[in-house]
Length: 239
Ligand SMILES: C[S@@+](CC[C@H](N)C(=O)[O-])C[C@H]1O[C@@H](n2cnc3c(N)ncnc32)[C@H](O)[C@@H]1O
Image 1 (cartoon, helix red, strand yellow):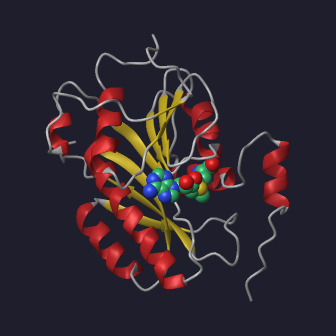
Image 2 (cartoon, protein in one colour):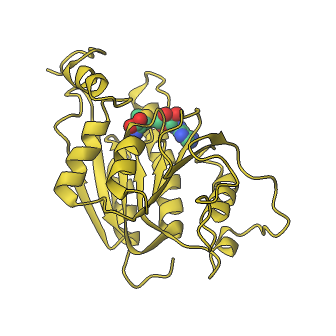
């Protein structure tokens, strides 16, 4: 019998006491402990990042030489000097690619800060050099991510099948973005709700990724059907 949802549970109280914005930070900590995800100096993309607890933890793990970019539909209050956040719909692939291509340009942007770090900014104005194909952004001009994290979750309708399908849809977008923007051998973490379409989605992922490892975390609420997938991009594939 699943436990009822209690907003102010032990993990939420712990998160508040430790200065984290959400209890979900303990899920990332657990995954990091199990899989050794985050290292100093890494470039990390966090999809569905608001209110920002994963970014708080990530910022500390990657240190001042690392960079993290957070994307969400809702604003994220400033986090740290090595974090920038953007208000973008992950389903809008053109907007996502615009933001990432601007941010991942060589030489490294942001230290000199022509856009204030940690502030929420909308996608850059339409770029005259942008071409319809997202692959046009990847060239020697861009540097890829070491890790893509996603804790993205759709707003729930209360209808289990609909919510589960929306979660799969969002994750399909995140997986596409990750496959495109990760360096070869880079890793991606997805949160998925298990349901009727899960096996098909897992099968698709296994075809496109070198490694797909399912992981349950102790801090997931018992009533939740959520599962994390820790995936690795093929070492030889082009970014
Ligand atoms: C569980 S919360 C993430 C919590 C976050 N990992 C943290 O530690 O603070 C899921 C987030 O996914 C975001 N989200 C849902 N649909 C989205 C979309 N289409 N594009 C971007 N973000 C989305 C929601 O706005 C929400 O903030």
